[in-house]
Image (cartoon, rainbow, N blue to C red; front, side, top):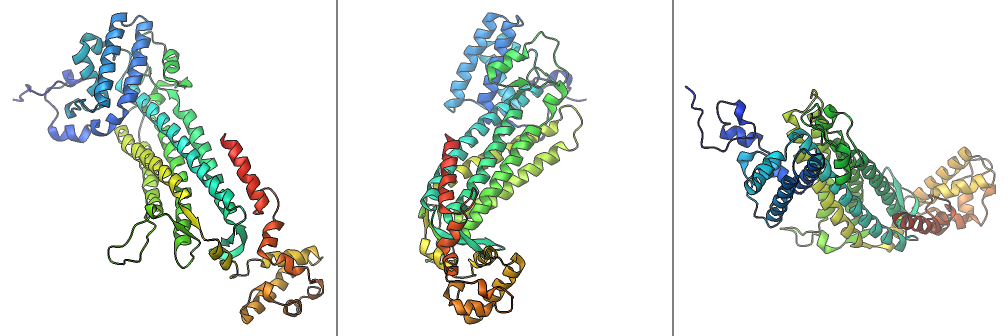
Length: 472
């Protein structure tokens, strides 16, 4: 015969069952040790719900006063680290509800009228994620402001631009950094757009079908700062697409920062030597005393995989679930929390790390002497003199081959040597004049790209100015 007695606290749903949950199952199914971080959002949602219940005459004014008094004490206990979280109470919601009932009696038991943990948790997650997105948007702004400072200071600092990691054309370091500003601008747009879909109220959907009580969902939405309510109760309690969208935006942001990190690592290598990072972002070696390792950008690169993994976890979590709520959805929180934590920490450290970049301008300029960076400018010069582009391309390729044999750069040729190198392309040698050497200089190359989006220092400064105005 089964022993149905137990000294364990009764569950909120225990009346249906004839035996208590085993300790193993309790540990396996409980979420309180990670979802307690939503406690403040849970209290906010509960207070708005209680206010609505009183306004609708579903609970009395004294009940509302007792609930508000009890919740104030619970919030104070949480903030002082004195709240007693209990595994037996499963999650943040039941822990708070049990403590509220202990403090104010029956009023605490009436709080759950007209709602379910299904719509309660969906609301808490949205409130928590909305706060996280607002923090992330602020941190992206901090990162952008510091990035603009470095870009403006290096608007005219020449460096090689690369394709395939081969020297392609001269750019400025400021222009290069502004590429990451543009990426971050789109990242901010994605988070802001995601916030619109996060900011919809599920509360009032109850378990899955709504509630028979005369609730006012629009009032609760206004109280909690939601733009609108979720219009289908089944969808409201069961989908987590807003969390998936957040993780997708986070994956893109981390991918951009990972690319930036890869460049910082390459640039800091003595083989390249374009920059140095402040010591506070680097570590040494336990065996090699000369080492200065760029650990922070390396770890950003690694943590990007972690965020990508969270996105895949949530997609996989949702892909096989029938409507409406299923216990699977308890697994939505840890990947979501970890993603937000990783993005927030990464943005904080990156904003500071940008200010710790020391540019080695001479090394950047020296690198432009390798790889024939102004070859395209020479081809453009010939085209402007009337030579078809394909012929100009061929002529310059021959000149590069000759320079390679001689072991020099194109500007080091004399005019006669340039003409001789292009002799096999009809019409090319005679189009070369003394003014060709002006376009073969790094400064000439940069200045010639003087249009919106170009790398001319004038355009880089204009881009920084536009960006600063947009951040105001």
